[in-house]
Length: 263
Image (cartoon, rainbow, N blue to C red; front, top):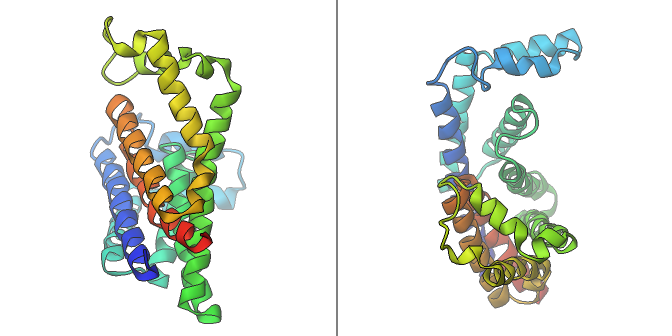
């Protein structure tokens, strides 16, 4: 995959991911009960011990009307990625994400928030470095930043599972699936069979631990990323984590491109 195609795919997938996230935040504002956890009146308690100037700044930034304007501007910047990223849009989206993470005590949707920030950081690296080293080298640096973080995220996840006996013997997989959004697994579910649960658990463990092998070639990288897409779709199916699908999908073009450069 050539550099131009990689950049365009990254921009399109990242735009989709950011728009979904932003529309969800805008949707939350329709439920304006002052006791809701997404209201700043509740969340501001987390910065109660911060300096007064910082508390006043956050109070202004997170006023509901100003926050809504921020989200609308964020949505516009995200949509602009479909026609190409710019320094202005990358800066706006990067700092917008930081502000949202602060408001949500560090994360709204766990790892997907941080992987989104990784992709935005890679894009920002490319934009900031272009005047100094040229667009080609700058984008390669940004893509490598994204690819390394994405591959590492899978590897660490697999290594943690490998070290836990509950994952190795399949027990924790059944527990997780019983806690899914559609309720406990049916009594006759295949996943309740210990052998099936062990095979599924070890499949995830080995695939994640061996993810660094994706860098040995673009075809293998495409295969590993394809399995990752299926994995995230399954997580969405059972746990409703739709953001994970798009947050990691936005990193796949970088992984496949870097695999081609490395090989």
